[in-house]
Image 1 (cartoon, rainbow, N blue to C red):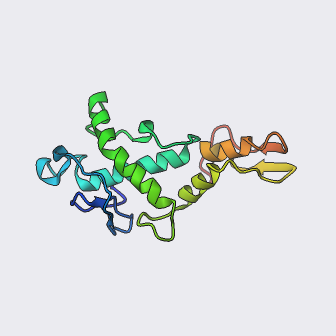
Image 2 (image 1 turned 90 degrees about the horizontal axis):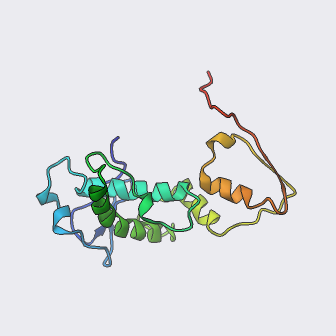
Image 3 (image 1 turned 60 degrees about the horizontal axis):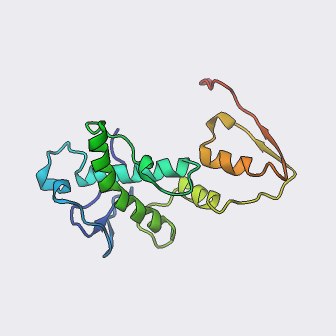
Length: 173
């Protein structure tokens, strides 16, 4: 799968937006010498482009979860880094960038990371909203991610909940 974003090589650069604009900041974490572009072959997952991809995938996995905080288990497995020690190393590289990207997303009008639907939905879900309704219907429930499902189920104390969906989704023509 091709990366959806790129990053520039200087240590003072955060992950780029998917549009390719680098997000320069003065407080960006510095990658270790092993993460520099010159110490790894072009296919290496620690190249800036791969780190940017892993960072954005980490944010997406967090947004799709019901978890209240961004943690190590949101870092995706990457090809050639499947074993535990390599994944721990990747996690150590990605998490500072992921925390910085998530902080950037808290200010969508001035942030450098492209603000998507998943981002505002997760930010809203983290407020533990109460939907003022007597009855809530969730259609296509089989496609609901854990973040939306958690918000929906949290309304159980004051609303009747109905989930509609197919137990085994299929393609329709």
